[in-house]
Length: 447
Ligand code: 5AD
Ligand code: SF4
Image 1 (cartoon, rainbow, N blue to C red):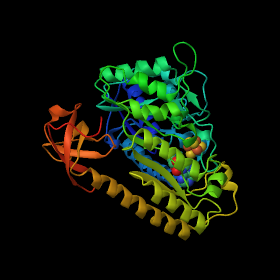
Image 2 (image 1 turned 45 degrees about the vertical axis):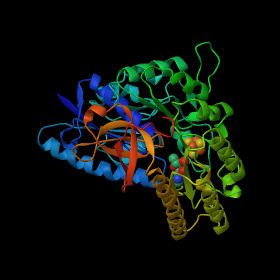
Image 3 (image 1 turned 90 degrees about the horizontal axis):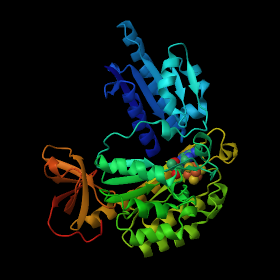
């Protein structure tokens, strides 16, 4: 049997796309392998969000080229595919820089991968179009998903934050129709999924066509999905503050299946920088929004993304970000040094912040965010939380899952619990996860 190795970089959307490419290649007779040296097809599903992510891809391509050479000496061919956002942004340039690559395919056209692989036998192929046909209609039905699965409901972004490549690589915002989302959710639930994470670059801007024609909001979609038999939990990511509408906030109050966790990037706490970033909201608007969300769901775990060292960021701007973080208190967050991306408005800006300043600001911010994350996790110790058991644990006799707050939890139990939501008393804090024991006591938090 032919084998395919598929590796994903970057965001959850890429993880989802990579899984769909595995399904697609499965239909073409490829078995997935984790051993790259035995793969007849190697797919790198790439990320363009920061320069570092792109450099990682090119260094991996160097290794894959060497493997391709070794396999050829042994009489075996290897087709190298670069998919994802680097493919979309750099197109033919990839083949110039890395001539061993056979196929370059963007995130909107990977459903044509089987055809592209056939064409690659005759020469290099680049497909970075935004085809009009719905790629989801061309993908095979999802395979059994595991207890927790991603479901793409929306793609692309119309926000044009000044630092971000997504509107260029993923294109304009498009929502999948409600009926298609529902059908995929029902299939996933029938295949064993208990939790769905609805994903999209700007997921709370969801406005998919409803069965009667009008557009549905994400809040309405969430409530409908909560009725799908078998589904116990729903999450969504990633959101923009401007699209957190009242209905979605209300769903956090009255839809028990919607988990108390929200990733709502703010990027900066300085109004001046937020304006320069074209975020179209200020820091106080974000604070008030968080207040409303916490009124609806007081125990909600909040997460965010931050960029330090955006062009023109002063010490005072950075201090405003630190203040915002201190005031809000995040359960976890991602923070990055600003990285100029070709083609984005901010990349033209003359006021670059020196690398050493970026480094110091990032270290200071991360120390605060790490302390907040530890404090949040420590607060869970002693409590009973519902855990969705997803897989075998790190050690024999353990299984692992997630709390409602997206914390990783390990318990001593057998694999028969996989796919079940069980109350767990959290007993201690590890480095990467919480440890707990199964209990009969009902959890304090709904889940
Ligand atoms: N530089 C640094 N971080 C970036 N992000 C997006 N673009 C850039 C960039 N040019 C971060 C933002 C976004 C997350 C996915 O990546 O914080 O929310
Ligand atoms: Fe990028 Fe801004 Fe769109 Fe998020 S909202 S994907 S940061 S342009």
